[in-house]
Amino acid sequence: MGYQRYFEHITKLLNEIMIQEESAIHAAADIVADTIMKGSIVQAFGSGHSRAAAMEISQRAGGLVPVKLLDEPSQGRYEKVKGVGTMYMQEVDARPGDCFIIISNSGSNPLPIEIASCAKKAGCRVIAVTAKEIANQHEGVHLHDLADAVLDLHSCEGDAAMEVEGVRSKVCGTSSVCADVILNSVMLEAIEKMVSQGFEPPVLLSGNVEGGMEYGRQLVMRYMDRLLRNHTYYY
Image (tube, rainbow, N blue to C red):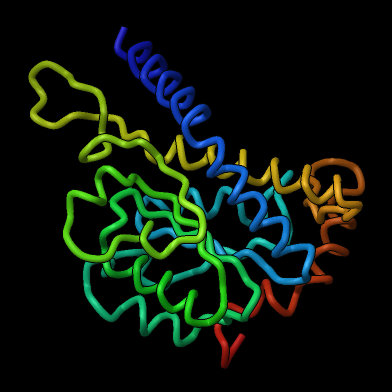
């Protein structure tokens, strides 16, 4: 059956990532843990479908509270237009010591690259989630060139991976699934690193469990100024 082929493909790809990206996962987790233990926050950005991976690690049950989703108004509609990312970052509350996690499968569009460049200039560290082989097929600066840690999604050209007889295009992307898994792996590593250093990680409880809403409000209050302040000059 077709669905079994996809399960098999994703399982093989995730195993490949687990083995080959081990050192990158450790490096990214070190950055996330260090950022939070020093009182700064993680800012997550993805345009288009990559936004789903940024949402996965932001304000969710079992996730770290000081991870903010960057809400770029066009949601990536202008990701190929030069200057949009630079203009957007003029409004973003980026402070030295913050960490930016930027997800872009192609790693070659101006929007995520400009966000990464501006973040570096603001004194922030950058974790790139991208497909290096795809990005390197394009000339110029790539997202991974600007990153302090690079998590490679091992995606194929065009992202979609499954062939169906009679259909011109391949179907079923892999980058979203892999980005979610690799980023959750980084968060787990970061949380374990915090615990090992005697720091209580600010992990959000589900609002559907007893005491979850109250506990969550207490944690969010601790970071409210940074989490709710998406722009530098208005709330």
